[in-house]
Length: 85
Image 1 (cartoon, rainbow, N blue to C red):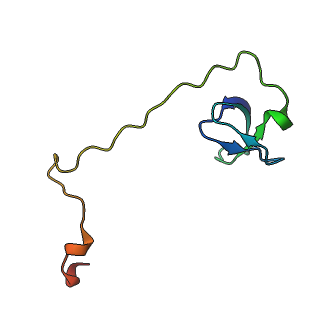
Image 2: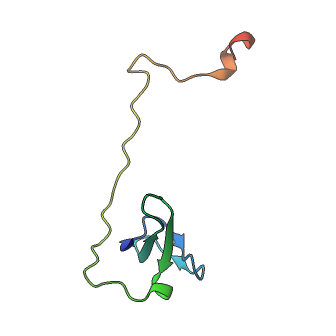
C-alpha cells in the first residue's frame, strides 16, 4: 500500500538518504498485507506530492498519570534490601 503523509519527525529517504524535514511530504510504502514494515521515500525519489495533501496536525502525547496519586510509588531499586532485588 502506498500513501502520502507528512513526516512526524526528521527522517531519511530510504533510497538516497536525503534528509526529510519534519512536516515535509513523504511517500510511505507498506510492505506486505499484515506487516508493519514501511519504506519511506522523499520527494527527491518519489516525485512531487499531491496538492491536496493536508497540513500536519499537531498531536500531543498524554502525560502518564501521577503514580503517587494512585497510591503506587515508582520502584526505587537503590533503597531495596539485597534479598528483594
